[in-house]
Length: 240
Image 1 (cartoon, rainbow, N blue to C red):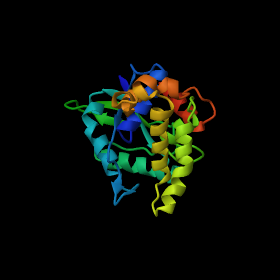
Image 2: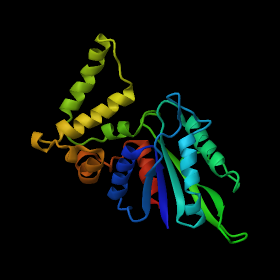
Image 3: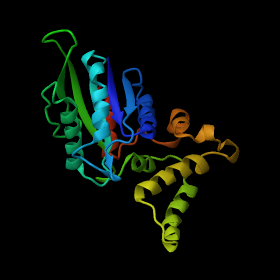
């Protein structure tokens, strides 16, 4: 049986798959994403994380059949805080499974709770699945891109210069970008312009999937021991 890792979107899936490969855990772990998860009116709704709920519900048969024995739900902390994110994940588990099982509450990250899924056609027989969550952050906020920036290996002159100058330039023109959008631009510039020769800056070499599958270990230090969220992530993965 495998451990299932549920992340926010496809790009995140590529990143966490790269970490799993780095830890040599790809045979025992699978990553899936829940795109367009809990956004309503462009803001996260921790009371009703609709896409995460739907994604969990879609996995009910897999859990009943014993396909996975552990599930790790990973979410970015962003600016919403630990209690908000834990509440969101607990709400999703309650909404998805409360009609078929008793749902214990996750009170912290890296803590497992057990949910028993009835096995189809077998009275009083259950498949036991352990659920845990991880919150990705740097200094109590942010997202996986903040982690990548902090563990980059190669020079990042182009990415750093654009990141430094772009906000002021946009402000002068009456425009702005959120920090998370600037982070994604930094990652793109670092992976494309700082770390590839001009002839190699093709779509094939710079797609999120290609970068994380073929170049991640040359770009990022996944062995970094200074970031608590990365240490917690690797510890949880390594203990599977």
